[in-house]
Image (tube, rainbow, N blue to C red; front, side, top):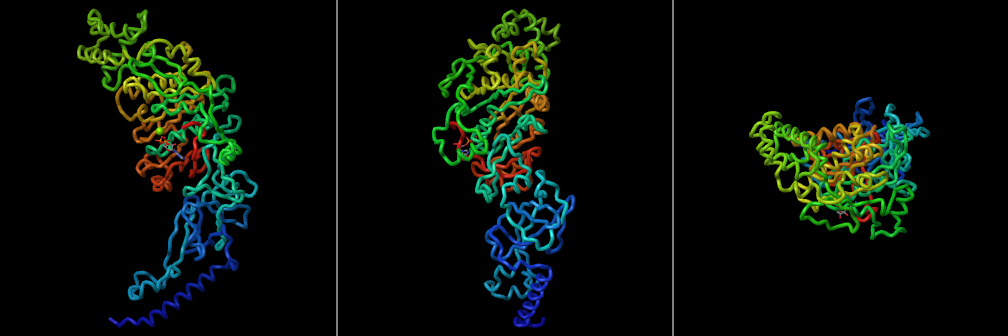
Length: 586
Ligand SMILES: Nc1ncnc2c1ncn2[C@@H]1O[C@H](COP(=O)(O)OP(=O)(O)O)[C@@H](O)[C@H]1O
Ligand SMILES: [Mg+2]
């Protein structure tokens, strides 16, 4: 092997480098002589190809040395087209160093050179862009990317709120969700004001209020789901929506909140840690965000269960689940332990009981089912097998049923007008209940809402009432109730909800599902949800909830307040910074 001549190799390298530099110069038809302004990050380069198409794009930016330490992936940039009245709006998706040919890392020369002699200037820094849209000077709406930027055009960060709003296609008003951000920080533009992000909420414009195509708030425990939900639900209070059916009357929604941790009654109070001259609050109000307790609009409804006591809000109304609702929802007494045949048998018995019962109570039903005098009839007339009947009897006599049904005054079927009233916020805490009691209560409320929004329930006063007004049903820890589980009873609930969700737009039902286990929520239900608010979560969860690809790997790093909003009918997916305070007591 010929001896390695370091001197000669260095000379060769110098020559190649000069050639590379002169090629650079050739490509640079009009090299930017002046120094780049602070917002400028580099210019469009061609390392291999520069192209846009209807499927893929390749736009690369040469990052000069003086800018290398200040660019980060995910930043938003624009490239003026110059020959068309558009700018390309893009996200910086990848940063890389490329080798200049002469100092290929694998070459012999490199191995023999002292490492310190090879500095980063021997490499080229390139940023790859993901073009998102084209923003015009006048057009309010963004267009798809269809023109090619000229080589060497200077690329700069966004400097104008309108570039962001148009580029990402963000609604101008609606329900406030947070401020547009990148890498955990709000985007700052010339005006210095953060850019508010809204969910479309206007019935008079095209496109429905997105609340009625349902919302998922997902994230790992402690990452701020409840905080985010309260801030979000507070924005909904006071909105008015046109009822499609009822001759287009405008009505305020009733918010029904299933609250397993007794956290939502604080919506009635001011946040005691906030002063109204707080700069953030002034900001929030300036962009139309709502803040502050809703006071007497909010009612806390406490289900009675024998032996259980509620502690929390100082103002609340007790109620009970009347057994007569089992006529509409027989699965309330089925639990997960009956197989399909046993469940069918139970439904027969429930129907038979309500046909003849004078007192529609659990105690009477229990008697009816247990009555040995009826056994023969059950076996022959209803064709229920003996073993099946035994299983049903075992199930129906579970002691917790007599503790949760018919517990005194205020059956839910009588106080419906208070609980499901226009403009009301009705909070149903359940953490004081036993596990079985909680299941009965939550499933009852959810079923009433779902049925009233899918069937004409005019023979039930509560059904008529719920059908008449927009309803927003928020369910915290939703994975517990809309599960994947395949028991006969769960399937009924889930199917009911899928049906109700599908008709949400028409019937004005909006679901807000809050969960740390989206993987346990039934896929059919998840697929009905158009708006996802994603808080910190591991990448497995991110994948499961179909987070936009480019956020899946970074969601695990999201600290409190950082979220991704994925709502195709509202805007491009993007990162938001929620408020770091709760607009009500939390
Ligand atoms: N954006 C935020 N800024 C500051 N504190 C927050 C934020 N989000 C949540 N927190 C606080 O973190 C704690 C957990 O939040 P929480 O909403 O209860 O989480 P999760 O419901 O996801 O378990 C609460 O004390 C809450 O006040
Ligand atoms: Mg929570």
